[in-house]
Amino acid sequence: MSEPAAPEATAAALLRRPQLWLIPTILTGLLALLLSLLYMGGIVNPNADLRDLPIALVNDDIGKPPAGQQQNLGAQITAALAADTAGGKADWRTVTRAQAQDQLDSGKIYGALVIPSGFTDSVTALTTPGATGRPIITVLTNPGKGSLGSSLAGQITTRAAHTASQNIGRQLTAAAGDRVNPTTKLLLADPVEIVTQVGHPIGTHSGLGLTAFYYTLLLVLAGFMGGNVISNGVDTALGYADNEIGPWHTRRPTVPINRTQTLLLKMVMTAGITLVSTALVMLACVVVLGMDASHLPLLWIYSYCAALAVGLGVQAINAAFGGIGQLVSMFVFIVLGLPSSGATVPLQAVPDFYRFLSHFEPMRQLSDGVRAILYFDARGDAGLTRSWIMIAIGTALALLFGFAMTAYYDRKGLKRFTPQPA
Image (cartoon, rainbow, N blue to C red; front, side):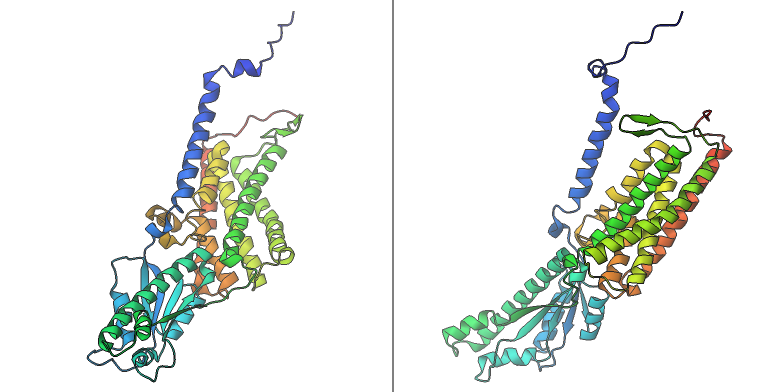
């Protein structure tokens, strides 16, 4: 006689088992906590975390020093800002106008404060009948460094210019004494006009400097999701994973193959399929949506190499960690990468932990290269050279780590699954 079939379990009965709840509850809660701390921790208070934001300081003033002073006003402002280390929010870089423009064009600075050549003369003329207009200090922004970074630099430079104007106003008011009328005194209290200009323009279809970040995110997601889809597809096709679509469930016959050969198969397929995915990303962004982009052949080659490096990293992590590999690669490429990318919030405005992550997290390395291609004429010193180097290092590490782990498992005889007959 055949044994009676075991009674079918019900959801109500299983829900009363504490062990069924334990692991999912712990993992879900831990993920929610970590994601909240990591993502919000990098953006909650950028002004408080801000320090050493690189800003150029240009003094073109050639006027003679005012009576009783050793320096002209431009030199006084430059010296005061360069010596101001109390706040520490700005890293003032005293450069020439040409050097400032070069650093704006290469994305090395977030903005600039420019004192014109006739600044001292125009200030001292305010108390004389020869005054022709208010003296001007120019604030230059760099939207290619992102809207938030450019805004922070603009706030710092504008505040510095206003402070300089008020200091100059006090000097002028004291020197003029009672020789000027009340209207002129009001003008002398804040005599300098601050003019804001774009120092390095970007296209109108550049998302206010955010298309570099979102395009980088697309490349990372293409590599991450593509790598996982390929990994799962290969495992299903070789009979090492079940195929379940809706109510239909199948299991293919297991193909005898070791871990190293499986990883090689997945990586070769990743290299081929990534050609298609990156081409479609560019087609959607540049052709369909009209994103501003130049150097299109370079952008495509870079996009392919960047997404491929991520995809190979995913395959290596999955091969090393098995079932939890997707979770591990999600943390490596996305969870830790987003807040430390420096693409939306400048790295000078995030806590030290994220600055540390930015030295090796893939998204930061990739976003620097995309930003250089899209906004800074593909200049190597705008971050593109470093990005290529980091892509090469990342690819090499993925290959070494992945094949080292699978070779170790194969030598130990740790087979993935007992082959099933057809």
